[in-house]
Image (cartoon, rainbow, N blue to C red):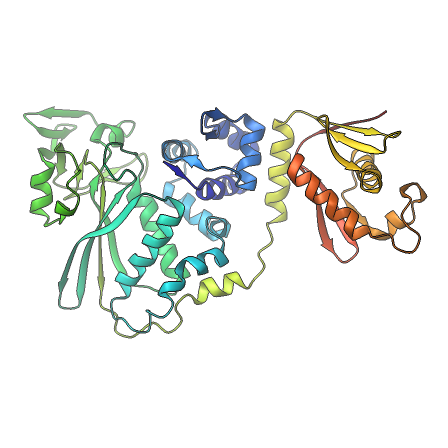
Length: 436
């Protein structure tokens, strides 16, 4: 299954800001971007994450998330700390742009003022967003109980509708933080708790590296000699928790390990095993509880609307750190200016001819020899070698052509408008320019 790579981009941006460049390089060198049957090199990985170019396999994404947690352990970070920093730094806006999010959620715009089940509405919103990021996955309520004004709902999460493949990740931690963030974005505060009821991961997958000795005897689980759980059929576990799984007859019969009480992992600094949850299940199930709203929501989607009408420029520091990392990883790009033919070639492909070629030659020369990145239209008009039309220089048109050709042929080079009469030149790689 292919999914959008927005979450990995947000992880990459957060790592750029929170860790030294050498640590970021070590992580992504060990986890190069896997697109289809191709594994990208280091520079291509940074470039693709920065520009969000490729869809990625779900297996690769879950592997990165799993490896990220152990990377954080070595850096004395917890996964929750990292996700909090990712949200605080606004990089989660890149997961789904606010205007796109508004289009996705438009059918629900009028429901907030009509329902008391605000938690149910939020779950429907999260389901719709989840399907946008990972088309073909399942994210549905399979059990719903209401006692007075308290709702208890169980959510089934599976990335394979036939339940033949499992993907292993700490769903509870990621889901909890994302749900908390969603509540803030949608101006809804309703969930009292979110916890794991069924987890695809086995006990050794979760506990290995945490310290305790794992032993099983007669279907019972012991950690350092203490009884923590016992084996049972998943069907029996589902029936004991009143899960309406008859709507999903494709799930296989299997044995799971039902845990009797919480296990706190001192290495990862979180509850690794949940009391009442089972492990080795065919899919993930999360249980959420919340109370009926005492009043209708009045400012539903206010945060998303505000974000869609505001400008959030990428932090200059993030930009400079990304370019520095890309420069260190990439080989020099060959740019050739053919003076007789009045054209510029990048890696042998023509990107500009005529006046745009002369402009690009001037800009790149200044970038290489003077370190200059920002330019004004007046500088171009004053240079007789560029040979603009004396009355109609049409600098905007020439720059627009350059932008389009660079984006299409060599996206690691860019012309960026900085306002009226000004632009900048950006390069994510080293440049080797020659004139013939």
